[in-house]
Length: 147
Image (cartoon, rainbow, N blue to C red; front, side, top):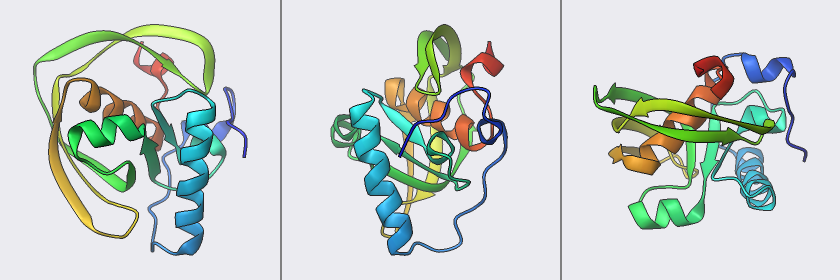
């Protein structure tokens, strides 16, 4: 499993909804976790490993600190706070590219975890930023599109 980089077309398309969580989906999620750690990332979306599926994983420490899942299937952000902050972001699919991006400080997100359980919660701070960045990937947006 390789991380794909710009200008691969899949990085710019809205990804397909996952119709069912089966053993192949769980295998993909496990492989994505490993690849994200190997690449020193804090998140990894399925299109970054050339899969057209609405899935992303986040760093294990981030999920443990915030008591949220580390795998998100078919996520939707339903609310964005008006309050924003700016922070430099990078992306595994844009090596050596860093840019300051304004993002909402707080969001509400809902998704399925890897066992098909519905999750819904409010996120703030760095977790909210990572979830917004990864959700952007699922919608075909890269940080350079936000610049």
